[in-house]
Length: 436
Image 1 (cartoon, rainbow, N blue to C red):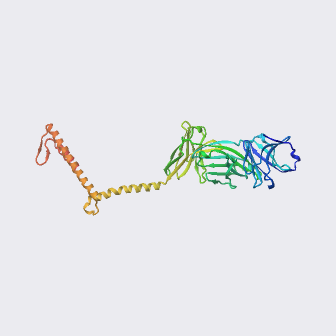
Image 2 (image 1 turned 90 degrees about the vertical axis):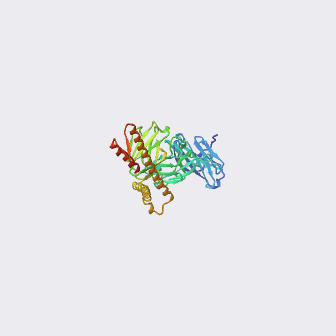
Image 3 (image 1 turned 60 degrees about the vertical axis):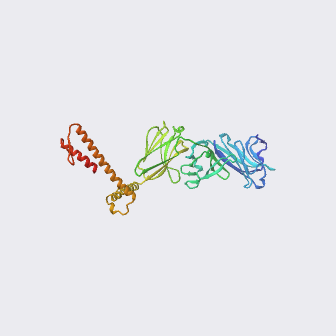
């Protein structure tokens, strides 16, 4: 229950400071209120000025622990002699005058003038287990040089800091998180890799304006498991070839823009190409993209590949974030390496028959012939004899057939065909072929 303080603030000598605070609708602000160390044990409060006094929004006598009440949270840090107030889910009606202070023989407080600007600050983004996600946050020019960082909220703590941006225009990395502040474009990017379901939750992107206050935007991250799509595709190609890649995506993203990009050294996208239409090829440099929304399949052709690289297929549901779904690992082999490898294999296969031929034709000169080699030679000779026998049987069969049709065959220590000289050549050719 709110308590109305019926004193007139302007008559209280305890008011010592005044700060101006700016926040954005659907976002929040973090306000720091200082006090002297002798008042560590005193009750702290945060209230809003009204015509008859000040209406308490949150107050507590609990020390060094977060206290929550609706949209408000308060933490009294007795060691630093400051207490912090967080206001969430801001709207235009929250603009006004507030006071933070402590109860003593006189009320001591800090005047807070809050102004809430319009701006959609809360987002819900979806990611997929095993994939990546990049979140874009535009900001106004006046916040170019502010310190920026991201944190994740917990049940017992408003936010745990995860990573801070650098003053220089370069990526900062912390485990699976990266952050980049593009001051020229007024764009803060947060990159989360190797997503898992435990990453789901509420996050805050915080801009520290001064030591007195910060403002933040909120986002809800929902990481899903989806069996529709391959998480990793591995391909091999020879330098100069073209490569075809097929990437599936969840049905819920059939309307979204699709993209294909190459990962740079900072694990972020470079040389990105996107397609926004159904069943129509889009080409940019070496890349061709084709989105078949009926079967939820993105087809990519890379022409004239030159080097190994990591690529990603993904979707972009909104300008503020991209979802990386399938990682493509392309291994490119130089054509000279593949030619040398093939030549080596061919040389090995040619050497075997050459050695075998030497063993067979010059057996008496080879003193290192093994039992296996001898067995191979004997077997070959037996096969020749069998073929000769079969040929003779064939000759006899032909002779018998000719006799049944009135041909006469005479034998004088050799075979002669008396009625048809041409058959002599046929028989002789058969025997000659079988023997040889």
